Amino acid sequence: MPKLLFMVGSLRAASASRAMAKSMAERLENDAEVSFAEIGSLPHYNADTLDDPHVSALIAAIGAADGVVFVTPEYNYSIPGVLKNAIDWASRPAYNSVFLSKPCFAISVSGGALGGVRAQSHLKYMLNGMLALVFPSLEVVVPFANDKTSNGRITDEAVLTFGAARLAEFVAFLRRQAS
Ligand SMILES: Cc1cc2nc3c(=O)[nH]c(=O)nc-3n(C[C@H](O)[C@H](O)[C@H](O)COP(=O)(O)O)c2cc1C
Image (tube, rainbow, N blue to C red; front, side, top):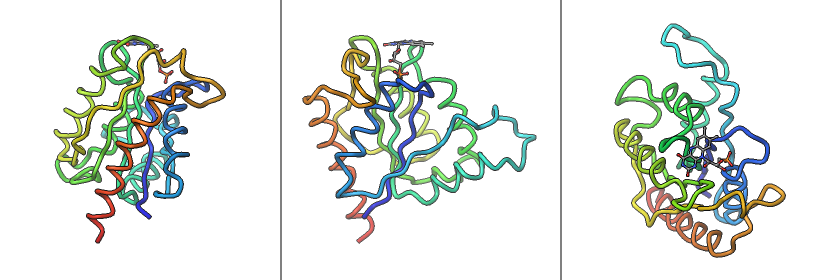
């Protein structure tokens, strides 16, 4: 089964983004091997820091994954600093990092009506800049996400069905790539 690494752009316990990631992971459990990246303990990016175990673990996790699924909230029309920090760490050496040709899927989440589309487009722009392979897909967004989060999961069945179908397309692509 393809290995999928989820990277969530929010650290808070009641995060709707984490709820969406967990909900998607559950729907994929028969089709993909899922794990979650740990980005909350990373130091601030500093090119002088050469040997940090959290950074090494993140880079190893991305390297081991067949595909990376980002689930990010929108903060001030873009992605949260904590996610940008993680991406910056994993983006070196430039154009030849662990993201080079790495298949990536972006999902966005917000408390507002637009579902974080601005953050999603920024994220895709960044991934393109790192020469990652941004999977072309209908956009998966979770608008009004806080009203749709309960017990660490998303409750909106339409959002879940649509998101799971798009991720199934991503997994099918990863399978084709492997064969
Ligand atoms: C610092 C900050 C900035 C935010 N900026 C936006 C924004 O630009 N657009 C938007 O739709 N929601 C914005 N929100 C609302 C978040 O999208 C909402 O709180 C979301 O639930 C946060 O994601 P999480 O539940 O995964 O933590 C912002 C929230 C915070 C804390």
